[in-house]
Length: 292
Image (cartoon, rainbow, N blue to C red):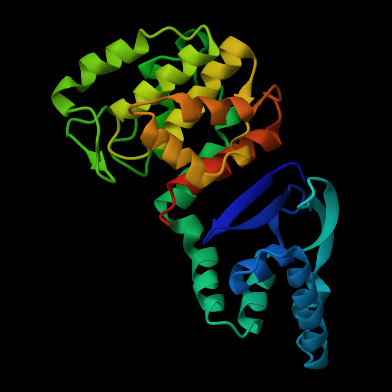
């Protein structure tokens, strides 16, 4: 039960834990109830689940209830506590039993999210930690970033790992012009990375370069963590950084790095070999890219 996943449905967390022996995910019932009902209050979700269990038993529709087991997940207070979990097929039954117009929308998201490019690339990103793809001598280079991008998006985008040849913009932000991109990347690659501030400066400039047509943020956050691990024996616990705060800080970083420096420093951890930190990091990295 070492793999922990956090998925997001309209800003609501849906926690899951991987059962290696039976090759399946177990999903938090309370999180599913909360996501469907748009409710973040833990006690209200618990009370609703208690009511729904009784209702399903009365109506002889207790397949979900009988298939429920308990596993330890991190609770709102930060401690690992036993909570009700169910498998994928019971998630579908549970959603159908909740009389809420959001239930079917949730089910569509839950059922098909793993078939999207994001879903498939996220699965590949989960395995990146075991790939040992980037050689230590290449950490912080453009080559390393290309290798990361190619690993995550290989077979999904025909430009995986390839430096773009077109100029792109996002949300009103224009990134480095294509005709200047190769020389700009050489400049970024040559930037020092000996101190915390230097590393963040290099990350911000690589973000401004945006070397790929798509998938820049997800690849570059892994690239940044590799630099932190090599130079400082630290990495970022991305689950400690709020999505809106991060996005606002990255927009502001075009003129002032102060906010992103503060956010990243507050989230640094020395748990560089902790698989759960890495898995949560991937979850949050993909969450940052979701449209509001």
